[in-house]
Amino acid sequence: MKEFKAESKRLLDLMINSIYTNKEIFLRELISNCSDAIDKRRFLSLTDAKAAADFCINISVDKENRLLTIEDNGCGMTDEDMEKNLSTIAKSGTLEFKKEHKNDENLIGQFGVGFYSAFMVADSVNVISRAYGSDKAFKWTSAGAEGYEIEESARADAGTTVILHIKENDDDCRYDEFLEAYKISELIKKYSDYIRYPIKTDVPTTKKKQDGDGYETVTEHKTVNSMTPIWKKPKGKVKKEEYDDFYTATFHDYMPPLKQIFASLEGSVSYNTLLFIPSKAPIEYTSKDYKKGLKLYSDGVMIMEKCDELIPDYLGFIRGLVDSGDLSLNISREILQHNRQLKTIAVSLEKKIISEFKKMLASEKERVLYEKMFDEFGVSLKMGAYENFGEKKDTIKDILIFRSSDGHKYTTLSEYVKRMKDGQEFIYYACGDDFEQIEKMPQCEAVLEKGYEVLLLSDRIDEFVIKVLESYDSKKFKSVADKDALPVSEEKEKEVTEKSEQYKELLGAVKDALKGKVKEVRLTSRLKNHAACIAADGYVSLEMEKVLKDMPTGGPAAKAEKVLELNPDHAVFSRLCDAKDDKQKLSDYATVLYDTAMLSEGMEIEDAAAFAALVQKLI
Image 1 (cartoon, rainbow, N blue to C red):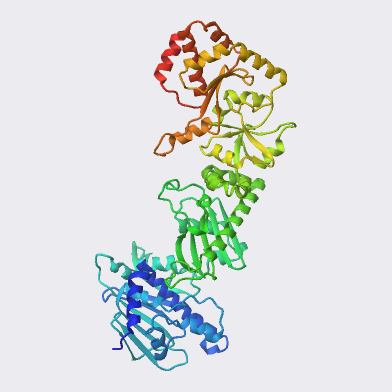
Image 2: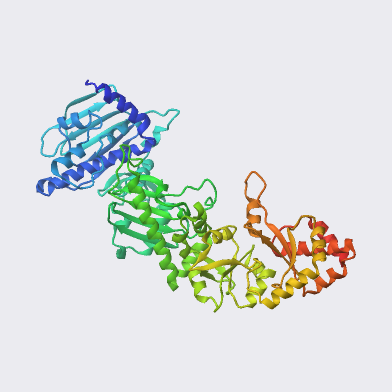
């Protein structure tokens, strides 16, 4: 028996125990080697017609003897090739072939280490191979780092057979599963479904008995892989039903997607992509257990199940895949050597998705689909605009839509601005728990009476997004709750100022009665049919206070500086004036006005039972 060099021994041990973190990828590596070998022979057939063959990869299982066999009819190896490629770790026959023949085809196995992943699941490996054009075959045998043997053998035609003796089960792994036909088929479909050559294996199939009496399970040796990826087929030749079936089967969703997005781009990094917008958010979507990411393929071989670097967080609901032959893979084919390539693809994908979203918004037919998507994932898009101090707000602002007082329909900011009334200075918005409640807010009344449209913001993040956006198309956002939401005539302003001075003592008494609940009590001219409303001074609005209160900050949440605004033209204000000399009655009226204004804002009051008792007392 020949010994591996000391360096090779250490490297082999490192590879088996460290480089490959997932044992099941051994089959991917061996199948990829078979594909490379067939690629080489197919390349030779371009100048040597005799090299052509009915190329395929065969996999068989012998459970009784714990043997798993992977066989191809590729270029095969001589004993010298075995010595170089199998006995010198990190010596790649594929890389040498590319150099020798100046071949630019995407042959994946360039590192010469994938073969050794077999020792993760096998305690011994036999390789029988006959090189194309040779009449001799050779057998390479090894039980791991102890060494190897090469001897002459027999094989009918060119190609290579790899025979693994699968390990016994232990505490770390149940190796028996790699002797199950269903598991082999599953791994082929998972990692090697798009290898360009047929991969055939034994597949248990339930069939009706020939006599027609019941069913029986028979084993058939048939092709398992799809070979041609659906994303590489001409778009016009694939039916929507086929894409839907691919999506539901691949991503385990019971509902077809709302839409699929295609791209085939060439540049510094060329790639194909097939993306899907789900119809519904998965149950775990808003939990910490949800993992975003796209499937990553290198020329049809799956490299990563979920590559989160390909998609930004705010688009994390998108499902799909990317296939590129330009990726620089590391020796385990589990990560990439150069993140630059991933970043290049990620930037391109983000632009493509945003572009598709804009097209959907502009299309009368697809607008409906976009709005359905926004119902499910709109908060994610808003988070993208808000995060990192609005770093991506200019990228995202044109794909945001909001409900509006115009029939509660969705509108883009661009559409809102185009509908603005002559003389309208601001984009108005109001926040609350639902559209009906928002429209009934006292502060909305005057703005709506002017015929101005109001954005109805019911998501907790909405006002934070508006604050980050600041303006759209030079039009600033303005909350209907702001005291300067509407311009006031000099005459009206003078009237309110005079009344404020006239009732200064009363306003101070109401503030004192509320015992620190409000920063100020003031008169306002913007209320019509309501007696009072709550406004906020400073950056933190009432809606922000509600959101911050529910956040697990670990400390006291920021609070809005509340202002109680009173309508001096309302009958209730007259009752206040009448009670100015009755301290208890004035306190009762002030408390009721404050609590009812808080309820109108969708805010909680401190003591609902006390409020009910006070109302009953006053009645």
